[in-house]
Image (cartoon, rainbow, N blue to C red; front, side, top):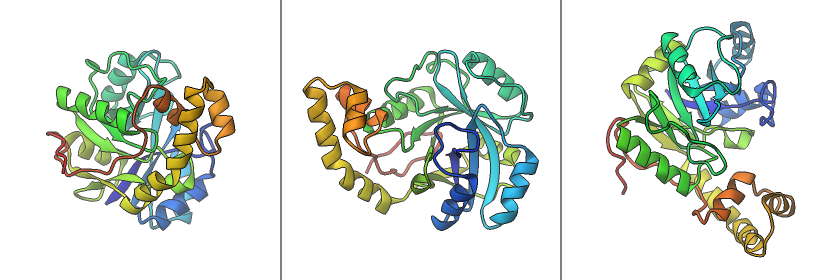
Length: 267
């Protein structure tokens, strides 16, 4: 089962730029078997999932949630029961404890993304680290892999898609189909998956955006702030501007073969 764990829609996420139907159609078009809708601070109800599932029977739909914590950035929670136990700006320790008590897994979302806090990532009782996503360029990716290796945590790849063209850019290949969020959480916990990416889309993205990154970098060297860069260079995001300002390499890495609980092997 090929699954994207991290997808937003405009129904509940301010960052989402497409309707749920559009995102589900994209998942189907890109060959995904399943998708987890992880809105910010809202977990879809079972009735909502059933309605959307009826229109897209070929893609298994699950619900999770992305929670912005007080000082530790964003956490993805999958498989935790209940829809009313979380809130924005919760202490990360409380998110982790409550999610685990409810049977869920907790994944650090896009850690080391420039401009995002990372308090506690060295000691929080996390289940996994997101090491690939649309919003993690080389610098953030490499730091996340290092963190996962140092702590012996699982590594996951997700799209963190806000638009249809990013759905399934990165994904997980589960060793067996998951029929519920609880089963999916168990498989993540056990490392019963491998990471995958769409290499042709990654190559096209990296190639097409080189000139934009060069233009943005030149503006930054000339003294432009991030707002000016994003406004002046169409398609360049704040994440990319911040990576460039920090002197980090921009671009999306391919996925190397690895064991989810073990070393990240390159080559």
